[in-house]
Structure formats: structure tokens, C-alpha cells
Length: 114
Ligand SMILES: Nc1ncnc2c1ncn2[C@@H]1O[C@H](COP(=O)(O)OP(=O)(O)OP(=O)(O)O)[C@@H](O)[C@H]1O
Ligand SMILES: [Mg+2]
Image (tube, rainbow, N blue to C red; front, side, top):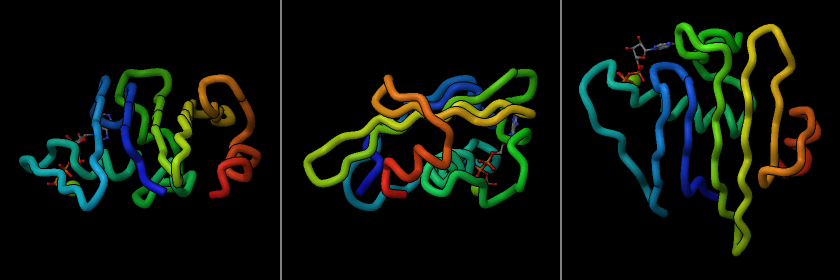
């Protein structure tokens, strides 16, 4: 299983981001504070439904924004799944699979086999 594409809206320092990720090892290169770890944190959030940095969701929402969205195109064998998480402070986060199915995060993780 691998992430083929990462899209962000109002996640950490990113108003928006579109990041294609090739198969094989990838390296994010940039100056300090550029947002490299933020990209890894977004991928980690989708994989684990949590942050390796903080225990609450609020820091992951860009300052001044109401909510954050992480969307990943995930390839597994010959199938592709689009998994989208909407992070809203003070409310249950929402998950969407292949842009149609909405469900709570626990059910979503079960569906994805995470
Ligand atoms: N919720 C947030 N809203 C706005 N900006 C944020 C938020 N959280 C983090 N940032 C910004 O993200 C930047 C840090 O990003 P990140 O830690 O990904 O950088 P980095 O490229 O990994 O840096 P380094 O090379 O030092 O590890 C800082 O400028 C910080 O202000
Ligand atoms: Mg870093």
C-alpha cells in the first residue's frame, strides 16, 4: 500500500497543497520551517488517525481557518482508494471514501483495513 497523491486544505501551514508522490523512497527538501514535517504529519494522520506531534486536533488546523482537510489517493495492489479526512476542532472528525461514503473514523478505518 502506498500514498500516490496528497492534497491538503488549511492543514498546519498549508492553505492548500497538491503533492504527487512517486513509488519508492521520497525525500522532502526545504529550508527550516518550510513545512516538510507538516507533510509527513498529514500522511501519518491518515495512516494512524492521530498526530505523532500532538494529542489534540486543533494545532493541525491552519491559524485562522475553521477546519482542515487531508485527502490521499492510496494504491493497494491494483486498486486505488481516495480517503478524505475533515478535521474540525470540538467536533467528531469526518471521513469520506472515494468521495461518496461518509462514516465515522472508526468505521472508516475498518473499511480501509487500517
Ligand atoms: N496550525 C498552524 N497554522 C499555521 N502555521 C502552522 C501551524 N502549525 C505549524 N505551522 C507552521 O509550520 C511551520 C513548521 O513546519 P514544519 O515543522 O513542517 O517545518 P519543517 O520544514 O519540517 O522544518 P525543519 O526543517 O525545521 O524540521 C512553521 O512555520 C509553523 O509556524
Ligand atoms: Mg521538520
